[in-house]
Amino acid sequence: MREAFTADQVRAAERPLLEAGVPLMGHAAFAIATRVTQQVRLQRGMLAGARIVVLVGPGNNGGDALFAAAHLAKTPLEVTAVLLSPQVHTAGLAALRRSPARVVPWDQDVTREATAAWHHRITRTISQADAVVDGVLGIGSSGAVRGPARHIFAELNHRVANSAPRPQFIAVDVPSGVNASTGEVLEPDHTFPADLTLTCGVAKTGLLVAPGALFAGDVDVIDLGLTTSDSDVQCVELRDFRHGDFHQFVGLPAAQSHKYTRGVVSIDAGSPQYPGAGVLASRAAAACGIGMVRYVGDSAVGSLVHQALPEAVTDGGRVQARLIGSGQTPQDDVREAVLRAVADREVPVVLDAGALAVLDAHMGVSDHVVLTPHAGELADLLTAWGEPTQRVDVEDRPLAYARRAQALTGAVVVLKGPTPVIAGPQHTFVQPRMGGVVSRLATAGSGDVLAGVVTAMLARAESERDVGVSVSVTQAAAVAVFLHQCAALTGGGRALIASDLVDAIPHAMAVLCAPPSPL
Image (cartoon, rainbow, N blue to C red; front, side, top):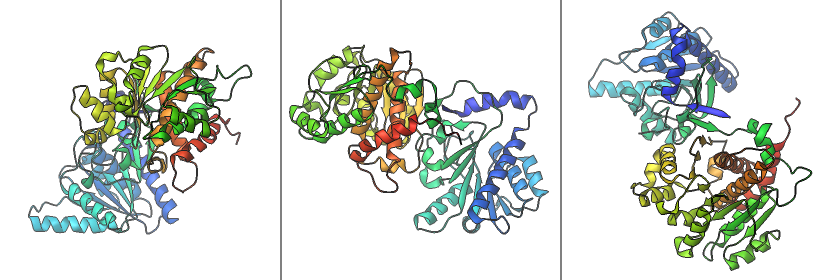
């Protein structure tokens, strides 16, 4: 699995190498310069005549940028380094001054008129560049961009909003203004989104979780040979399904399998007001290759489920996972069903939508329960549990609030959003952006599909445990989120509706189960 780390974890991993005299900054700067030249060549076809602007802040991040600029200046590129702090890395600046690069010094004039003119001049220089390297703030910063860079980034954002052409923006380690450890972005209007982030050593948590991930663009890790401890978050990737437990977990049935060993789910979803939720959740669960769907919800919705899914049954019986609440409200008498399901610790249960609103601390929730809220529902849940929270709080800090909800409730929390967070008692998973998948999942019923997929994956994990495949509830939920996003990647550039997602699930599973290509 891909792993990501906090700033403190990165510094701890760097410390023994630095104490041994390993020139980490030199290695990073050379790699950054190499990747920048590759990007420019891809963009323009050649280096000669291309203009590069390097924005330099204080500290080691600015040092990386200065040394990288010195390397870039030895190529046919035209390099301009703009110093945005009165104190920059001394050795890096000396190396830059020995190169052919042009250096724009720190503006010492503090008059408002002169400073505004300087900002405008620098912004114009940036706008005329082919690529901009952002070396203003690094992993040591947890606040918003300050000083000249703040005004420059604001003007650049204004230009982009008004359809002005923009250069390719490449961030060193993290985009300035993004908290490397949490993904927080305190002032989005003064934080400029990167097309590519070249992060040094290991991936940083803040580059993979929103809102920071939405400013990071593509993320490339520059290997510096760091030895890391336990990661902060993990990410499910396609290669995780090529062998081991995950491969068996989502693979085709074994020769001795039958419907009861492939996983059986109970679906209590949909209502007269939102009947489609029951249909979508049931169809999504069935599409995941489980053995049986038992629909136990509203009878009228059940008729619609049978029309859409003739394989569904309505009788009770043994199940390996349950879903309650999708397309329901607290007024739909879900509390008793939730109480019974939570009390049965032998069978994992997914609580969605209306079921979340009736959950309370007296029900004895544990990690056999999976909660699937969006930001607003999580804010309501935390408020009901005694911690007043607004939706915007969750959207600004999804990782922190998902973890807080997990600690408070004891459940596994799947927080839906641009970069879903799956917070369990031992591990936290984050599902980074996958192409245009974020916007394609913003459609009615997408959450009902996800609830069905999570339930199916829990059932499969329970059934496979009997044959030695060990996938935890948290891992099963993370796989479900990954599968949901893989399904959204199908269909080319057209918009998706939730029914399309259901139809795409078997294809997505086939991709996950495909043996590696010999080529």
